[in-house]
Image 1 (cartoon, one colour):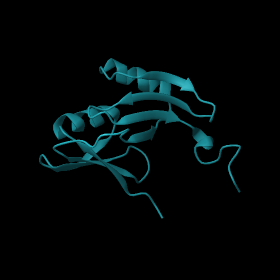
Image 2 (tube, rainbow, N blue to C red; image 1 turned 180 degrees about the horizontal axis):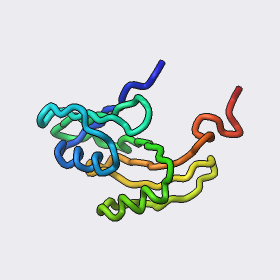
Image 3 (cartoon, rainbow, N blue to C red; image 1 turned 180 degrees about the vertical axis):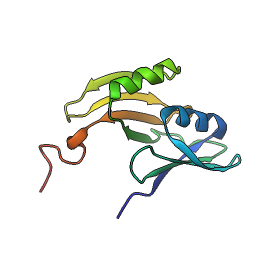
Length: 125
């Protein structure tokens, strides 16, 4: 099994599209005002957004994007006026993470885990 894509909702598809382009995703489908789809810079997964009139209430969605050089990526995004809830820090689960929200309140974690992403020291054999 391979993950094809994740699709999230947005009330403002145009602004959401620009936000995710700034994060580095490459737009490959634009079904005017209804749906957009991106290629991730690495790997085979894609990421899409569909327009909704109202967002569901609750804790929402958390999206993880791994980047090679987290600190440099965060600085570059800050220069493009992307606001972060927390700057890069090392976590006890051996990932380095920075947190932010997209325009619809979805929680985004930019991180770097390297080999610990799928093979942490506590992995079950």
